[in-house]
Length: 289
Length: 136
Image 1 (tube, chains in turn red, brown):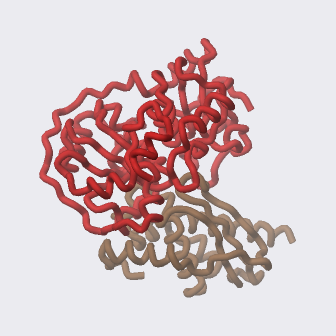
Image 2 (cartoon, rainbow over the protein chains, first blue to last red):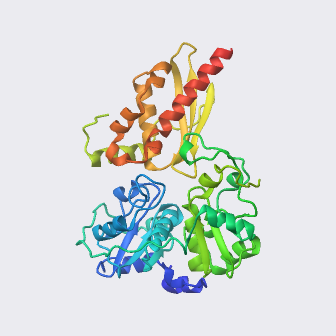
């Protein structure tokens, strides 16, 4: 796939994606770009990654170690400096599982105002399928200057109160979990007690669009027309509305947030990272099945 | 397993088990079949256990899908249990912290559930087997 083919998919912001070929052509330009691998499977990077890519781990790097929240601005600035990323560096994310965690990392970067971000269309699976170079060599870059940013959660992050307010005004919600979770058939997951919920179901009025419907079998994103068919035709969303996406802990829904915000160009999409692990445990929170 | 292996070697061991899992597959004659985990996050494992009625494991297999840590650790644990002929009670006494140390705490870090998914599901299978036996 080339940049032209990405253009041809008709996205509102085609520049939010780069092709595997583009990454192959630009991976040595470490002055301007930093390639970041973010995976669910934390060992994938160790066994081989795109040359000059650094790893950012959503568990170890992006979470506050104590409180349920993301890292604070000081730690973010330090993480960026360590990875050789300055505020002007364009960060190209890619990862396993259809870029699920790559978009999650991108979303966290955006909380800190790092807006020069792109995703490698097709992610790790496409890079591998094309037989492109992989290395175990961990690159080292000079420490960058990254002033401590301000974190702004208001634009792209929704909290419980925002969802409650959203319910009062019948605002559109999209639940991106599997149909079993949405219907409340999966009440808890054995061995995952801390990511479970006491009640199953979904937030009243939420449409169900499992996150992975946005991608093709080769890991690339579907075209804008196909995406509109799913999110607008089937789920009834529209770009002019204030949309809140959620899942179980906010990771899968960051993928949908990326699709709606960048690829379809919706102006107001927020990711409710409290998601079902908060709502499904909340006393007297309304639930639909 | 040697706890003294360096990080690279421990990762290599996990990857080797991930790519060539031991005792993976279904077991038609199993007395109990117990699922654990989540395919959406970290991984899922199903353990097939057949006992001899006297506290010994006659055979055990597993199926599952997930990341290198969860699948590799499951393969390592099942292999060890069968090689060392652990009894059902010895399996229940297996320590999660020791497992994490042997697989590599520096690799697993906060993903302890991934590393213990196999062992916890095996223990659940042993408990289910014991319950079933008691009902007979």
